[in-house]
Image 1 (cartoon, rainbow over the protein chains, first blue to last red):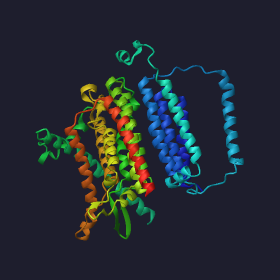
Image 2: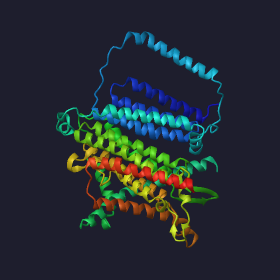
Image 3: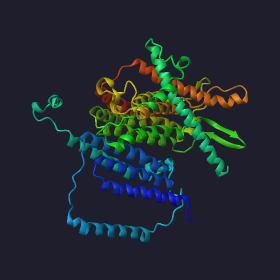
Image 4: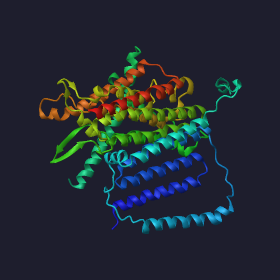
Length: 179
Length: 343
């Protein structure tokens, strides 16, 4: 029997896949970025259908809201134009596309047949913020903290790469403003 | 409750709330013109209707009949979509805001809220964070240097202050232990020492200050209205917009102000709690009255600040956000967490 749930799942899935394809096809970076936002939002819808409302909200706030705003911001700041279209490499067409198809079929087959996960009732998995918080700060405290340190290291790396110390007085910041 | 009653109730509630919200948006504009006028020793609108009360209607008609220009060389799909994005997401967040306790009609209980979700606060944060795209894309798609600068400023400013805004709310969340706006309000019932209302503003004054500052910046209002600073950027991101498309940005700004005021009322000012007495019908209406009165007071504060303060410089804005407001919000969060744990 086709339930409303299944229809919604398929609809969000279709939006997700269409957005992803559009991301690749579009030639202007801003259109690609907007397609990626659509993908993120559709994914949030899928999480919501699974009963994981907290993850869905975070998906929208963090990915669609914060990270993609930075993407769009950078595209606007660089005033990136339409990208040049090359012919594409023959290797990619001959081997890449069949390889990708085989790979995705393999992954789907392994996940469906051999992962040992059965059907799950909606709401059976941890969804409410309280449960997730409990798990995050008890069961998964160490991985959580290690991940945050990893992100901190990445941020510091970005800061070091971005900040070029002025090597001579001629390159001092006051000079840069004039350019 | 049968499902059809639920659906009908939801439709009726949505229609009423949207009607009230749009009217409130129109009359906030009137209020602002009137109040700022009196602050500057002028009258504000007086000609259309008594006290200029029909001015919003006249403005609306004017917006509808103005020539709707689309300049050449704009990126059309996004140029048309941007005002829609701005106004749609500004109006959406009202859906999870509760106005009062449940009322009982025909034997069924209806909460005074379009929909009660247990992550209401996160829904509002998510919707407002998507609303940034309206301003950013408007600035970019206009193909105009002033618009682009306005859009860039707006997105940088909103992303920066969103962090302080979120952190200032966490203190309240720790105290109430829920994301549901209804539960957050319920926690604030009662009084301290018999006369001070148990509102979060008395427990979290620093958080309220951070929220206030971040909220002004998020809604691009004076003293943080850099994205549309007319002395340097003509009109910022909406320079190229005219007629109804311009009006949409205007509506979005005022709808966002009202959302921010509602959120401040719910989180810090005790929601619909207030002195209640009199006959039953008055008792039923009073909570909604208190809610509206607090929202009105917050909006008045907005306008008051606008009539008082000059605009920041952009580097001052960024330094204030990152070097002062963010550490302050973090310190408040840590102190609150320690106090709650030690208790």
